[in-house]
Image 1 (cartoon, rainbow, N blue to C red):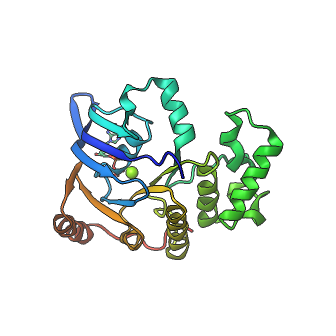
Image 2 (tube, rainbow, N blue to C red):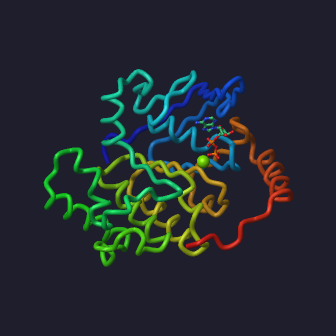
Length: 248
Ligand SMILES: Nc1ncnc2c1ncn2[C@@H]1O[C@H](COP(=O)(O)OP(=O)(O)O)[C@@H](O)[C@H]1O
Ligand SMILES: [Mg+2]
């Protein structure tokens, strides 16, 4: 693989202002993410996980601080450069899959290539290859509503790979899945890591730690030790009802 990004996050801060109220989503964090790592960032709901991934992927801008990818600061990129960087270097995977409901699986997966002016025949070929990689080529002509949650996430992963990005960012990719399909998605992400990609997953699913090479813990927008995280997590578990068997 060429061009594997090495990420350096320095004093990254994101503050949302809602009326007079300020929400500190990220309180100034420093992270180095090695190229080729499978980095898992654990955090409970509201800890700043999505904010961090959005900033990393250039979907939002920090209040202050820096993100360097391959020694290039993404804050210094203008909108065009940022869009190109996102398209060519990053594959996003979301908790809610974000497939377009009117399109079949094949068209959903090939859709990002449309922006690069690639012909329909080539889009379909590439999409089918990727659907085969994620074990979904037999569902190419199904619409998202005709797929299970696990199948939708496989299709979404195929779509994230369509531009062959070196960096995969996944925001709670197993959050809407049953135990078994969730595990399948983790294994798929692990395969992507083993094929040479840098994978960053934010989650509160501790099973993800079986696959990680690096682990970080996020609480209230700050990085904390594993011990501090576990103490907080057991307190959170005591006061919240666990959600049983989310729809697959
Ligand atoms: N667009 C926004 N406007 C205001 N507050 C936000 C916005 N996005 C996130 N927040 C707040 O920032 C904090 C971190 O949110 P988020 O990054 O979504 O956490 P997580 O993904 O870990 O659940 C939360 O308190 C959330 O309410
Ligand atoms: Mg989130």
